Length: 211
Length: 253
Image 1 (cartoon, rainbow over the protein chains, first blue to last red):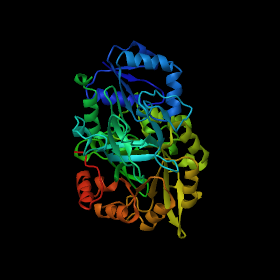
Image 2: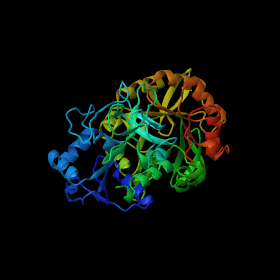
Image 3: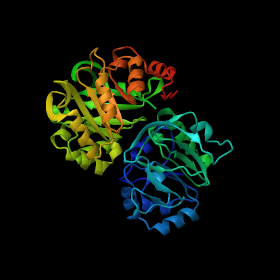
Image 4: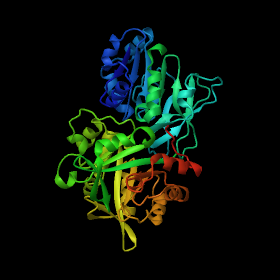
């Protein structure tokens, strides 16, 4: 079962429209309804805006330790998009006092100094921490996706997990564009706004046979 | 990577062709243009829909007037027209825009830019700048490019940095819809005046010229009206021409 998290601070209607376009059945739920999810469900967390907005709204509905325990014990898979992807990690420099899910280790940092958005299309590369072909290569490599963000996850080759990176224009450092672990994964870019390639990726990542 | 943006000037429900920012003829219904440029061979990188007379006649922009609960575009959509408050900006974004573009209301009260940036996010805020040269320097216009503001281009660029604008969409008024190319001196001035992403518009009538502005001045986003609707250049052709010059450009198909 696929569930899409509804938060004011997100573009969940666009993700919903994209899912409908690719004929995916899904349900829209609030944060507190996560506790009702069947075992091994897929939860999509979209996001647009700031980490403070998503954190405040999410944790006004649920307690951190309770939700983490539920997600872990019920083997819930989570697919984070943009701010939703950042929310999976430990912390964000955008809101040092804002609680994140912390399901994955990592800090979200500014992409540019002085701070400004990184906007536009970029292609991804498989980062150096992966040596073997992946089922995601055909979906992600040699294709461009739409990014719009001021903060991101700097690439850490020592971090376990499958990472695809990209280097924002005028940046010297690569950032993570897509990241996969067995249960938690996400994209910094917006697949629902990345045209035909984004919709193809979205279709594959929400394939019921895959989770 | 270069961004190729479709500029769709809108009057009522029609995509119109403008000359020096004034509407002159209907191209096709807006919905047809959005579909055309957001899929298949003509898929662009972004769309910008500018409601040309919403402010003038005092009504809401196209998206807020539409009956649909939420408008979906599979590529980024920026909406401009009568964005004059935080609430209108937020409503427009909630209804399906990924970005909003603002001009007149920002010139009337620049603080509005900071308020929208804080509420909606810097990445969602595009500052529309309509400019023409007067007595040797570029000045900013508003109200559909009809009225001269109190700001020179340099002054307005400086203010936009202070208020958390995410991107700039700069139209060369006297080139828009004419055979005059986007001024190179303006491209140069923009390239050295701001670190914000710049989109330029007006007088982009050939792939050669787009390539020149990118390679010589580092302009990486272009907003097209005449090129695809009057000059007979296809999106696929433009992408191929740019790629043949080793310019990084998206090839969606």
